[in-house]
Image (cartoon, rainbow, N blue to C red; front, side, top):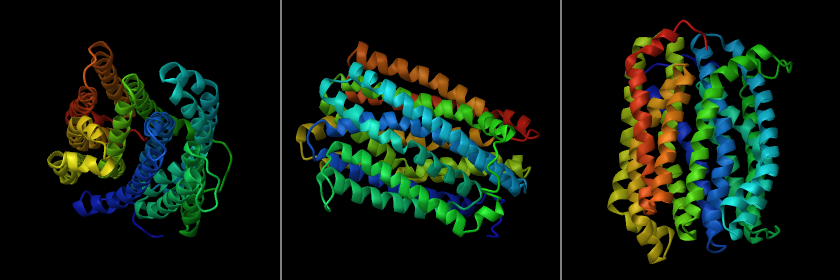
Length: 449
C-alpha cells in the first residue's frame, strides 16, 4: 500500500472517494428493502413493527456512526499531516470505547424496551417489538466494529475496499432472511424474529470479512494496527472530544424520529406501514447524499490538515453540486410517476392513494437533504463538532414541536406530519451554511484535532 494519503479538491477526487461509499451504502439499503418485502408477506402490521424496531436500533447504530465520523475526521487529518503512525493508535482506542457503548446499549434495551413499547404502541405490536429487539441488539458490538472500518478505510483514502465487507454482509443477510423468516433452505421457520437472527449473523460475517481485508492489504503494518492493546486515556480523550458532540447529534436526531413514529402508531397500522415505507425510501434515495456527506467530512478535514483552508469553500461547493445533481435524477421520477412507483410496492389502491402525497413531500425533503447534509458534514470536517451539536439541538426542538402540534394537537394528515422533514433540513442548511460562510472555523486551523 503506497497510496498518497493527501487529497485534492478536483471533481475526479470527489467521485473517486464518494462512489465506493455510495455502493457500500447502496447494498445494505437494498438489503433493507428486501427484508421489508419479506416481512410484509407475514401480514398487516409486520412492516410497521419493523419500522418501530428499526428506528429504535438505528438510535444505537448512529451512536457508532457518530463515533465513526469523529474518528474518520481525526484519521483524515493525520493523513493530511503525514502522521500516519498515529492512525493505528487512534483506531485501537476507539475499539475500547465502542465496546463499552455496545454493552450499555444491550443493558438499556433489555431493561427499558419492554416499558417503552408497552406504553406507546398497541398490544399487537408491543410483544413483537420487544422480542425482536432483545435478539437484534446482540449484534450491536459487531455492528460497531464493522462501522469503525469506515473511519479507517475512508480516512486513509481506501474507500474502494468498503465494497467487499458490505457485499458479504448483505448477501448473507438476504439468504438468512429468506431462510429464517419462512423456514427455507432447511432452516427453522422463525417468522418476524428470524429477521433479527439473520441481521445479527450477517453483521458478524461482515465484520470478519472487513478485518481480513485490512490484514490482507497490509494496513496492520502501515498504520501500526493491533501493535499495542494498552489502554491510552489521552487518545481516548481526543476521540471523545471530537466524537461526543456528533454522537449526541445523531442520537437526538434519531430519537426524535422514533418519537415521530410513536405518534404515527396512534393513527393506525396503515399510517405506520406508509411511514416505514417512507423511511426505506429515504434510506434508498439518500445513498448518494450520505456518500457525498461522508466525503465532505473526510476531504474538508484532509485539506485543512494540509494547510489549504482557502480551498475549503470551493471543495464544499463542488460536493454540493454533485450531491444535488445526483438527487435530481431520482427526484424528478418520484414527482412524475408517484403512483406507479407505489404500485410496485403495494397493490392496495387505498394504500397507494394515502401514500402518494406523502411520497411527494418526502422526495422534496430528500432534495433539500442533498445540500444540507453536505454542509453539516463539512462543519464536522472543520473540527468544530460542538457547532454540529448546537445546530442539531436547535433543529430538533423545532422538529419535535412541529410534529407534536401537527400529529397530536391538530390531527392533520400524514403528509403534513412528514413535512417535518422540510422544517428539519431547511433549519440545518441555514445554520450550517451561515457558519461555513462566516469563516469562523478558520480560527481552528492552529488547533490539532
